[in-house]
Image (tube, rainbow over all chains, first blue to last red):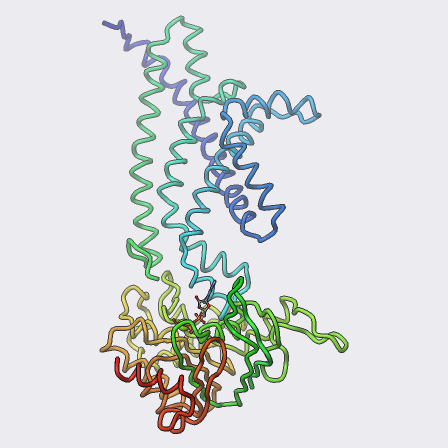
Length: 227
Length: 254
Ligand SMILES: Nc1ncnc2c1ncn2[C@@H]1O[C@H](COP(=O)(O)OP(=O)(O)OP(=O)(O)O)[C@@H](O)[C@H]1O
Ligand SMILES: [Mg+2]
């Protein structure tokens, strides 16, 4: 049915695998940004400072309800018009990082809300500082229930990296398009892209599930919260 | 040691404490009894600074708890003052509120290390002594999820004591427990009471226990103290009609 050419597929595979490294790098950096900035977004909404809370919440809402590809274009092409010139990589990482930070902040928020009120009161009764309360007591408990959501977005950010090809970040999709247009053959490169994505996404999803169990165990917590 | 001066607490239109006056002397053991909703928990929570005060002043060791003296005026206290004052008070909760991701020992070491800046060694020493005192020497490395309710509550008592508070608050600390483990928790409190080196405020529904260990019992009704006195007087010869009704209802039920 298709005229699949194995020799062509093997010929382009190394080039695609190289590009995969960039994809992994982009997903890794983007996710790193999202993890940290997402936590900042989540905590900023809990400072008790009304204007800050509202501003951050509106930003998060705005980012969540507009398409990622638009945000990538925006950072890359509109930035220079207001004097901010960014390389494709930098612009791409900022856009995808902030995009997923918004989603992760909601995951964190859910996790934080999940921690019983009594835990906060115990911290206060023991006179723990706000920083110790968050980082020693609350966040460790908010983490395990957040891991499935965090894992979904790890796979999500990885699957969204092809959008970076619109500003010519040399990731896997970009390489496949280039290979295809050089050889006028698209079947093999795109199929390989799909296979490579699948080969990475599936184990990642399993790994996340395993990781959640491991974190719960090493924090000494069973499936459910105690009080 | 603790003084409530005309303390009022409202939740919206609901006045929960109505110009409450209450004095607790150093090392005195005061039990608070009364019907549900009469404001017993609120008294403890305000003393622990878990609730804000609407009117009046609470003094701990002569110093206003949530206010600062500026000239002749009392102004709302800043965080530094609150933290300073809070260190005088420890609280044990109905639902324990242990940190589930930490072992019994870690639960008792956390605040001494982080807040009192004890060395790990000192904190470990102090924590294991206290856990031993509450009868849990063999459980120090267990997480709360592996402990029974009675054991968890004893860890919670040790955790509060590790901060060396001057005043300890107990809010119905046996209400969430199975009947067969209530005794082991009461024994720990009994032992603390026997040492008479700690001011204790205890909200309880255990009338027999209150009568046994208290120096004084306060009967709360509708946000105020309707009657107070020595245990023998309050339980044996209550003067207030409401106290009598409450006691007979509780004793009938129990
Ligand atoms: N956060 C809150 N918001 C609104 N109302 C509250 C709040 N906390 C307590 N109340 C109300 O304040 C009143 C006194 O509550 P409190 O918990 O002090 O009662 P209590 O004497 O401890 O009762 P119980 O024996 O049931 O524990 C109750 O009517 C309660 O509904
Ligand atoms: Mg109560």
